[in-house]
Image (cartoon, rainbow, N blue to C red):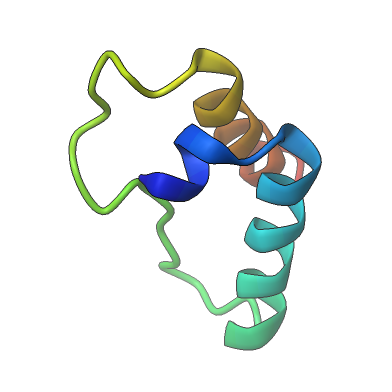
Length: 56
């Protein structure tokens, strides 16, 4: 959740892509905040994570 709150969209996208590369893009991989998405998470951070995964 800290990454989604404090990082810009480029950093979040890079982290998502790095995580996928490290796991070998195995089926069943899920992304989330590790928690619920509270109001303090900027929509841009959450959407950067979601949209990066959707575009794969």
